[in-house]
Length: 94
Image: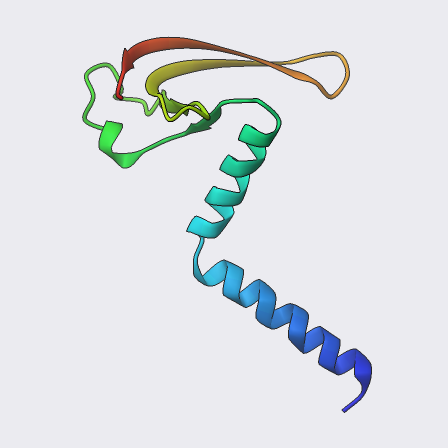
């Protein structure tokens, strides 16, 4: 077996392991947001029954301190590749 084939198999098995547990990807994104000093936004199935969330517009906002809020988001793209995010707190979860 050539060296190229071995490295290809190693990379494929690593990718396969990551894809087996998609929560890993979620955690990597969350960790990176906190490293940059940003909150982490995500949607949770538990919020589908929340009054006013008929169109799945609510997100959870998690801060690096562990505080968790239910929010709505407005995302605007700037002239370059920057984005501005404005969230409106619906209620504090914890």
